[in-house]
Amino acid sequence: SAVNHAFTGDSYSSRLGENMNMLSDAEIYQSADLLIEEHGLDASSIATMRADELLIDGNMDGYRMWKRIIMVIDNVAVYGPPPHELPN
Image (cartoon, rainbow, N blue to C red; front, side, top):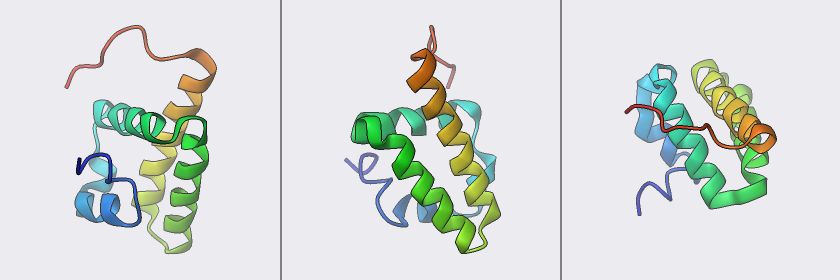
């Protein structure tokens, strides 16, 4: 599906456009969940590489968004998934 391919290359960042730093907490958790589903134990490394690319390009909004996703991925790795679903 398009969602599964959203994290490859620049397609995810392009899809978000100028609203990259406007993602809700629920969208951040959803993004982290998709990365974990797609990449398993490599999810944090994949997200870190993407964040680093954006930082090098000077895209601070994109970098901050990916750092938020990384924080969720790392928390899930340590503490497990949240006990309930987040609202949409």
